[in-house]
Image (cartoon, rainbow, N blue to C red; front, side, top):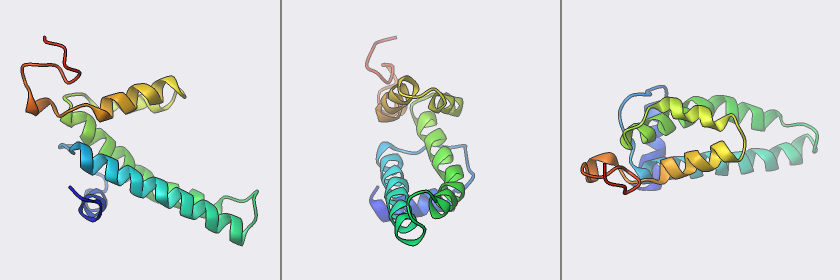
Length: 120
């Protein structure tokens, strides 16, 4: 899936935590989110100065549900529960584990192997 269809699908399925999302859809939506963070930070700096993060806060509040939903659907695609996203809470180690889980191949592509390639 390409950038624009991935973003449209992520926004259209705003609060849908069920179903699957393939790797490209997930990573394109993450790119959209982080580009928005960068743009909101620049606008905040230009309009309010450094200590204020009003526009960035609005961007995160409006996009946190679709980001979590597409992350949950991506984990479902690797045959895991969306609750694995709770690993976002502990910094560094949890983030690294989640990036590895999000980067794995879909479970349906090779049902004889676990997503990390280890035979069952």
